Length: 97
Image 1 (cartoon, one colour):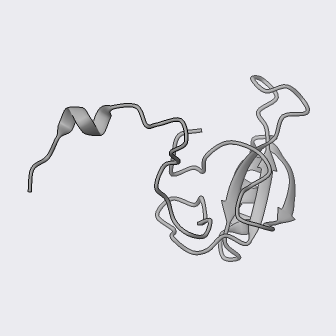
Image 2 (cartoon, rainbow, N blue to C red):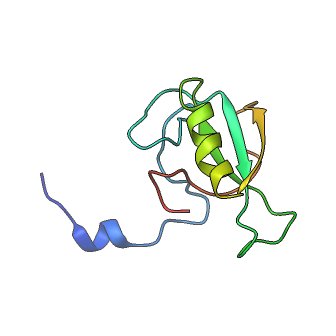
Image 3 (spheres, rainbow, N blue to C red):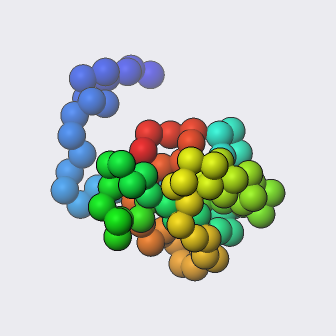
């Protein structure tokens, strides 16, 4: 099997979406559980007041992620995850935001 490094770095086609899990996963670092909650937040120093970034949470990490964001004054609200795509933007603490 050959590996094409340059080919793997090429931009994807306009209609191609990145590969990912079939169901949204928890944003907590190292957790691969299915997400059940959207934790919506923003950093008021860099985001417009109406902007909402979203971390996804499984039931076991919901409170921990809310407390982490709340201690920094970033947490806005938490809503159930419905459908397959979160309502805002952003990645969890285990990824780039």
